[in-house]
Image (cartoon, rainbow over all chains, first blue to last red; front, side, top):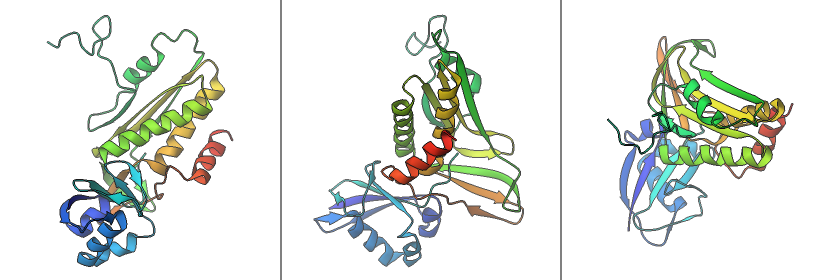
Amino acid sequence: MRVTVRLFARLRDLAGTGEIERDVASPATVRTVWQGLVGEIPALQAYEQTMSVAVNADYAKMSAAVADGDEVAFMPPVSGG
Amino acid sequence: MDSGAGLRPGGRRAVPLVAVTPEPLNLQALTEEVSLAASADGAVTSFIGLVRDHNQGRRVSYLEYEAYEPLALRALHLIVDESAAVWPTARLAVHHRIGRLDIGEASIIIVAASPHRAEAFAACRYMIERVKQIVPIWKHEHFDGGDVWLEGATADPGDEAARDKARRIACA
């Protein structure tokens, strides 16, 4: 199945892009998608303990299931305001 | 000329209570929107966050704000709902700007109206604290000699300790 990965702020800079299409084996979780991504871009690993994740623009946990067509977002600590 | 949709009587355009926008923020318009037909209100408080010219010893040139917009909107709505649950008499609004902001420009405006001042002040303070905790927006700081992404809190809307902390600060 195919998912869209979204990366923001420094994660986007590290990856060189904010949006990546990826094929992942089903069944998959957010963690599966993340591990594949870190395999390609090891620098992202540093954010594993501090980032937040979302599925289809809703906060989620690393254990959340991911379905075909989902948008999975990885976000560094926030600094709005 | 626009049709009547989205216009208030008298031709004034309705302002959304929650927004993430690249446009300059307008506190007066938002205050009027919150205060509309509010004869029971005795207090309106507002907060304006500004881009300042220094940060952690660096001379800041400008900031670029990036957002995950649909989730940022969702998080702002959640903050309004949380605040309304704690201060049920308050009516609340928040606009966050994104994109490039120069020194002195407003990055966020918050308005709280209520019958008495205590709830309005508290809700306003609570909202800015929660924005800094859970809204997926990031500052990219450009300063003399470089640039850096600022990173604050790990966003977790279910983190009760963070929510309690914001509430304690608001009610201090």
